[in-house]
Length: 431
Ligand code: SAJ
Image 1 (tube, rainbow, N blue to C red):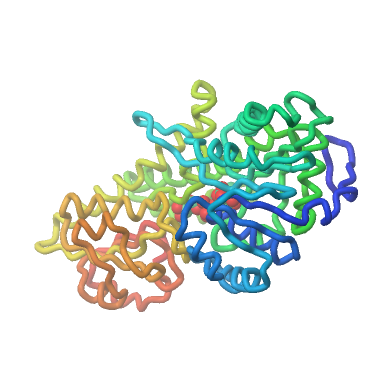
Image 2: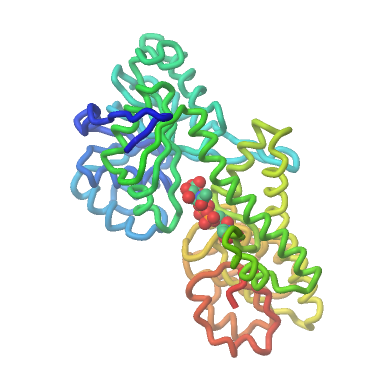
């Protein structure tokens, strides 16, 4: 059952034939899996990306990043001719915008950069036609969908859009934020509940008709602004909860209490569910999206800002602990285990582990042996600091200080005896 407010709505008058050709703008972590899943349902998908290497790689049937089962799916839909990538915008029945919405630093804080959404809108505008549907999937500050509509209206005075003509507009526009978890994207694209924010009810129904082709999860209709804030709220909720756990870790260190045991015990309460402290919060979502709320509501978002600052302070705190331990060693050799932003992915974006390793290298806190089984090569800035990737067993054997930064499965399964004669700093609490 799909609901808009309290009214049941029907989406069935939007059939697959309304959307035989879909243009997905941005072939990154969200756009490529989304394009591939729609293509696998028999639709003709054109993927547009500004990066020639991405376009080339997709056209050879190869994803340009690691994600379980994505390789086989992309190869299948490219070979069947259902997915094709290009650098040039093309016309379509529907457009799905899945471009990055990064942060730019702004003093001690950060502000959203929606220029990629603006560029996508300017590229789509010339090819828009009556009956088209445009969906913004990128996580966006409140008001971005309205901005998209106004770019279209400015550049295409021959067409009508929802802000001017409401339900009678010729082009439908909606915000349907992605909510998939990296590492489990293909399952979640299909099975997660979706929030569908139309600029009008007709827009919402049109977007619902498109998602219903592939989505098995519940679909809830709302307006675009509510959908924008819903997505930001989900990630801010998680960030605040992780900040609570990280703050407890500071308190416990000072009080000489084991924070992992504390949380396990507190979580026995039926209404308490504390998340896990770690070396900081990374990835392109949780560490970013709360700032989008702070940017539009600096006076109100006090807890949300505070949580961001707590989580962002964690890498420096970890470095200080490592430096204090290393100071007790004549010749510190530090095995830094894990670089990705979370376990069992190959994604280094906003990774606190990278921040920590970089800072330790810059401060020359001993010899660093970096281990990351999910990547083939270190990022250039770490290589420039003289760092190299090391084999796990070799690093463990040589190190006198072991710094666990990511809870990869392969790090869990070690012989604990190996750690006996070493200092251990386990930022994830797995040992
Ligand atoms: N982390 C902790 N402690 C925890 C849980 C996570 O320190 O208890 C850290 C992780 O190590 C990582 C960061 O938080 O550095 C974020 O990881 P995550 O697994 O919480 O989330 P993401 O960034 O991979 O994906 C999130 C998801 N959002 C929510 O769970 C509310 C996902 O559903 C969203 O689609 C995604 O953001 C997104 O694209 O916005």
